[in-house]
Amino acid sequence: MYDIKIPNYLHAFANLEPIRSSRPLAGRGALVTGSTRGIGAGIAEKLAEAGCDIILNGRTDQNDGAHLAAEFARCFNVRADYFSADLRSGEQVKALAAFAQEQLKKVDILVNNAGIQYVAPVENFPDERWDEVIALNLSSAFRAIKAVLPGMRSRGWGRIINIASVHGLVGSEQKSAYVAAKHGLVGLTKVVALEAANDGITCNAICPGWVLTDIVQRQIETRSRERGMAIEDAEKDLLSAKQPMHQFSTVAGIGSLAAFLCSSGAQTITGSALTMDGGWTAV
Ligand code: NAD
Image (cartoon, rainbow, N blue to C red; front, side, top):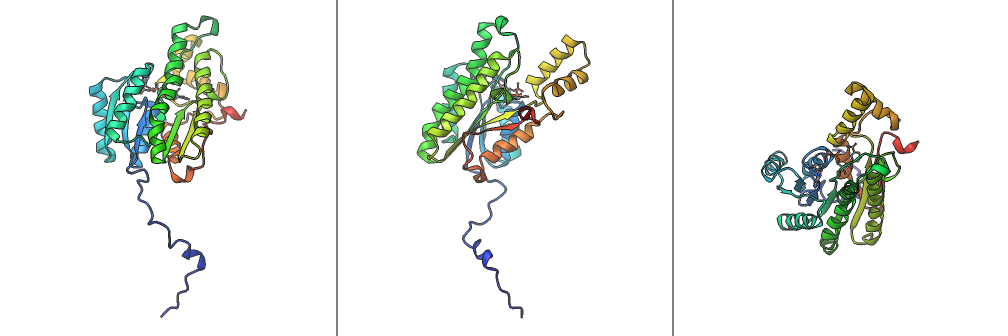
């Protein structure tokens, strides 16, 4: 017979809930804009893996999107739906938010990810391109937050994640609209964080450096064309021009950071602009 003496510190664990399953976000509903590919799809995957029901969105047609949602539902055993909307339009942002609230019954997590890029010097920057970039990269986030915030407040829980960029913190030539929109998004993040600070809601921005998605692939192709370089050389050239670490961040890495921001461990992280940028903004 062994006389087992339980150390005092272990008594502290007696009142803890049983260890949660590996699906810590089960029962939560998430809306991720621009989630048919790239970073948005990476975030949606990590949230679904953690058990979230998901509304996907993009400009892909409704049938292809519905097919993608069915794959999410099958692979992650969650509810998943797709809503095709062009979020440059305020009306379509409202329609997407209404669809998400109707399908999920609640939007606990909002990820404002949809974004576009346009590159030109200020004096040649077409007005309509400026308007489009601001409408999608900044105003759509404002409108989506406005639509879901009252529900989050009434339930006393919410996570808002705005996918900004290093360009929310520093500038680069030829990207006036993008840099202005992303700086605006970081500012919007802070204001929402302050206004919701004691309502169980956090609002943060993620600021990636280079991630090899379509938006960047196009910039590599342009660089290759303009500088007469092979694609692989243009890729290396792009990376090393701004980022001390010469490697791309991954959509899975950004997805994991977003999932962490929705976890209980992150409940007091709010109003932050979290970089994942290979040291870009450390310079
Ligand atoms: P991507 O082009 O691969 O994907 C963009 C997504 O947005 C797609 O799902 C697309 O359907 C959707 N979209 C485009 N226009 C839309 C519109 N008008 N209405 C609704 N949806 C629309 O881009 P990505 O690289 O995955 O970028 C996602 C976000 O991350 C963007 O906000 C971008 O600014 C930001 N970001 C990207 C990088 C990078 O290196 N890739 C770095 C920093 C920040």
